[in-house]
Length: 227
Image (cartoon, rainbow, N blue to C red; front, top):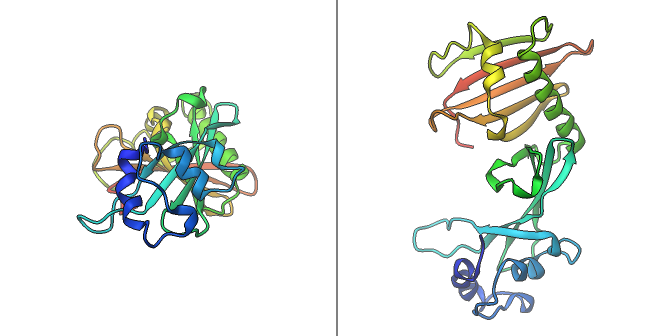
């Protein structure tokens, strides 16, 4: 949680160069609500309930960048959304906004790390929600005999048995571990998940839908690039 203890040092460091609106006093009242009120539009600031300070660029330096998290909302049945804003404490530049999506029944209880970042940032949110619903439907299909949905798998990181039985692997993937939702083509989405067994690997699920309406799911376990 972003509190006075986290941001007071950064604020003191930028007081001499900050605009008048951001010349904050270094007292205990400095908290998420005040950071939001001084850096976000008045219609957005009241929605903020949490935040974190970014790591400084250099050891011993003070960070002047914070990410603020809005109250989660229901996006669709079984899906939640959350708006996040990255703000700079020492100037009044426009906040960077991005949307997080997550599977969940009670949106108010979901931890921040469970919200997957939508990429690219300008990808239509409604299409991403639809893609996540299709992903969930594909997992249900993987558990059902007689489904015509095609499943394949590439074992790039280590042997897992996925190539021999991709349906079984798909049926067991923990979708609460999705942290990136990417639109990579007109009819293709890629979902990146944390591997529940090892932090060295990630899973990707590529969901492609043809013009005829048929879908193909391709799974990969791989060593992640530097996201």
